[in-house]
Image (cartoon, rainbow, N blue to C red; front, side, top):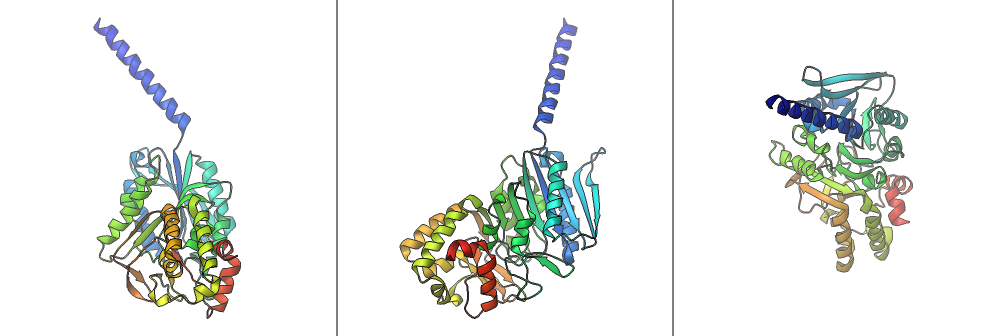
Length: 376
């Protein structure tokens, strides 16, 4: 009797185990996350970030997903590797491919890397993390160091080139920018068709970057834990010896509505001439980068100075839907302005066209999708 009972239990366990394995194989990885690194002179900090990822990238925390790193040391050498647990139970780097004589800031190179990762590591969904220097949407026309993303061999990407580098055939759950000042409304609008959510700071990000040792598991939850990521960033900097940081999560599906109400308000209040007359000294600064010809301002605070009370109430309703999570420390850091007190924080920065900055404003008119949506 006991032997029959034992056999029954054993068969039950084997059957359950078999079904579980088959079910897992059918489902496949839940999410593949690509970390796209253009190291430049941030290599030592980014290496610490990757070490932080390795320290917590257990199978449980990756939730059946893939964590892939494209690490470009320079425009001459790059490596693609996976962070995962090996047969010995230790989480480490697993080499995939080496690259030579290609630039990570070339849109075609970025597309090729993304295509390879999606092909070789298919999953139910995808996320992407960018790690490098950044200067919001600011162009190269003013200063050779001013371009939107990355810095490699003295060259950078324009914001529209970054959009070109992300293939249209893929739609990511999230894009996260461990990069300075990419939380501008111009940036998120340019990338709105590439992902459901964009996580970025409109201010400078301290070189230490994001606290991956805390937030990495949030990227691999069934539904990306956007609140956990944003709050984790904020808590890290609130308690840091350099307590300067702000972060926001943008729901890209609401950006067209945000553009529409912004266009209505600007049109009703003098168009560009109305923007020219704004008292910029009274509006919250969120970014003032080295070599930048202008500050970038808090989007909501700028509109508040332009709109009627009724218009501003409708704008705020749209803004609250578009920016779902936002956090800021009491002060942020601006290289040209030093520590800057944060009295108001909407989560996004904006550039107000300025008559005196003819070259910059002309570039803004001709090259940003935001300008075309709001001013034309």
